[in-house]
Amino acid sequence: QVQLQESGPGLVKPSQTLSLTCAVSGGSITTNTYYWNWIRQPPGKGLEWMGAIAYTGSTYYNPSLKSRTSISRDTTKNQFTLQLSSVTPEDTAAYYCVTYTTKTAWGSWGQGTQVTVSS
Image (cartoon, rainbow, N blue to C red; front, side, top):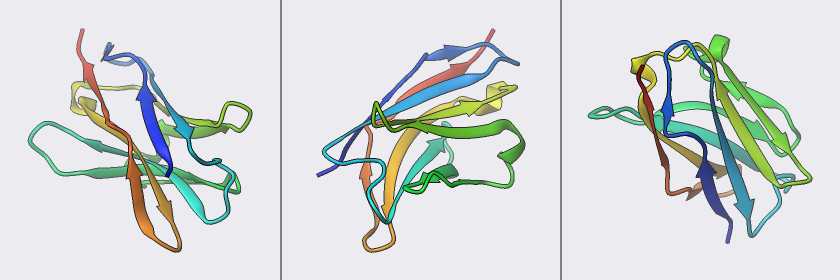
């Protein structure tokens, strides 16, 4: 079973770039039909899909965040990375990496990492 683990700074200053990494074990990020997602949940709010990188390397973004979001991968390390630029306190949230496949839909979730944007 695929396991995911997020890592990154817990505190980011406004206007800086947030960078998080998701380490994948138990499977390859190039496995056919897999999409590797970032989802976040601000305090007291619902889940928000931010974007994904496919097994092919193609990327997909939430239109509302597209201008500030970049997702990339390192196949040699079997991990993928989220970068969110020009952060504001409204980007404070728990960030999760999540798998999705065209065969089984949503699958494994990382434990999540809390990111606070504050000066």
